[in-house]
Image 1: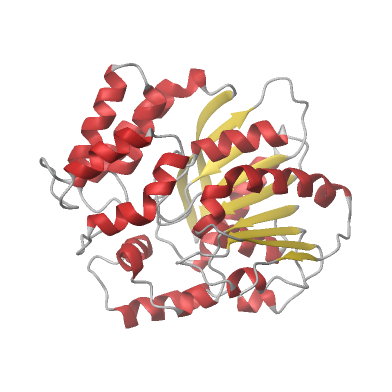
Image 2: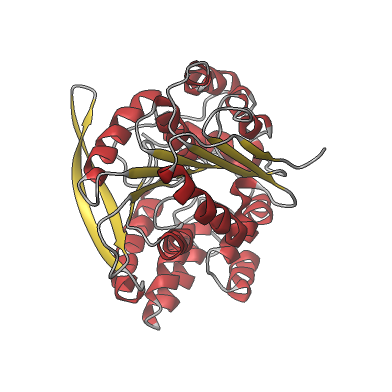
Length: 359
């Protein structure tokens, strides 16, 4: 179930350019692709998937498989709305696997059968393991609605090296290699992933999510499913009440929800109401949680970060001068996580701390 919708490419470049270069692509190459693209959906010269795929092909031919995987990731962006996008994803998977020997960590791609509703769903996961690290906690990592596990490789390897712990990455329901649409009861799949991650280390699991992946890590943390949760740029309740039309987000989320045509904003908003975490926020079952976002996020209002202020076992950071998921301040984000995680896992009761951007 997928569909195309009107999408203006220059606006996407304006918003996503920092993400493109901060996750590893040379700025000069991004500039060349940007100048060549005139429309989103055409698989022809000037089309988004065509021009990004040409760049990826050049990287692959030169043996730069990591860069090829990143470029194919942008080729299939923002969603798998047609055959050309799905082909780009298959090429990305191949190039990512070819790049794995250079990751600096052990890499394994696994297919997991996970409980879902009255049956199971198969989901590929990527496990990155630092060498020489004894069995200990495992980081479960979920990407966003349009930035999936392979697209966030730089962040993932940074986490592995900073935290010295294995990481198991997956695509949340409705995205990437997931076979089911995005639904609130996708948390059943997350519980299955947590159970598997417990078998990879000493049984302790921390769930970290980015953007919509952060929604699922927040949901899991508030429900008390993992041993700790890290939430980066997550829509929690207010974001779901807003109209999701900026930078094509209405179509991106509509595809993730399983619509087969572009829904009116009212219909989309109604479907998103069920994702509010207010019922869990009104309870007190949570594990230790770290919540981070940029103060200038155009997708997620500050309220969805600051709603965690004052909760027990919770630390909140709203970083100034950066946007969605604080993507331009990843080194600072990694430092915050590295400082917080040992405290969260060692102490049964952590103080509630807030760092916020004045407005």
